[in-house]
Image (cartoon, rainbow, N blue to C red; front, side, top):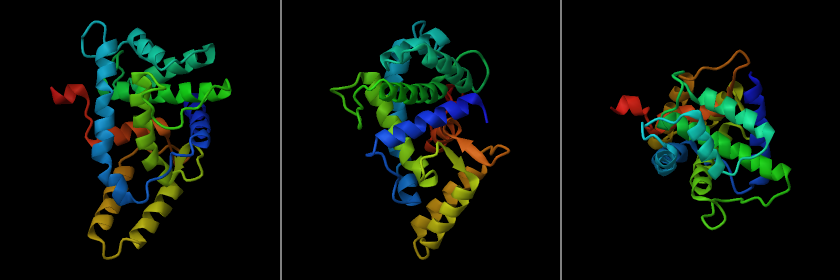
Length: 229
């Protein structure tokens, strides 16, 4: 478990505790049905991607990422170090820059950092996405994060900031038991179960939020830009 994993888990705990309107989806079926809405929220961030892609080369370098973070009003030396770690983690392909899918993950994590930072500073908490109180980048990323958390909190019901394999197994079993005779519910349970089995569980049988976020992007159909070409 990396230092970044622990830092983001702590900030996720703060976010969940200070945003009571964010709650778990009611069922796996609703999670599966919300994939299209999640995809739309991911794609909406493309306007920010295009704006900060100063050289218009279709990828985001670190300085361009920082320009996007400025739109999220992320400040402070502590956050600066985390942003560098977030960017390097988001560079899944290790090619020195991030494509759109990687950028969505990085920007969402940057928003999470900014939100926790404002709580620590005693600033106003914007509990739900609000176009009048947030910059465009904040509003779009806030909406994206909250939609992902609806799925996350099904498996992290205590708001620990990590998903434990035993909790996934328990939740899937519970939903499967309640799905008898319901074809859609049963199919959703099998779909989510298959997706989790594809993930890389660490030695402690946990999954970090950034790993979950990147996986959910794929589940929704958000592909790497290179794969679309």
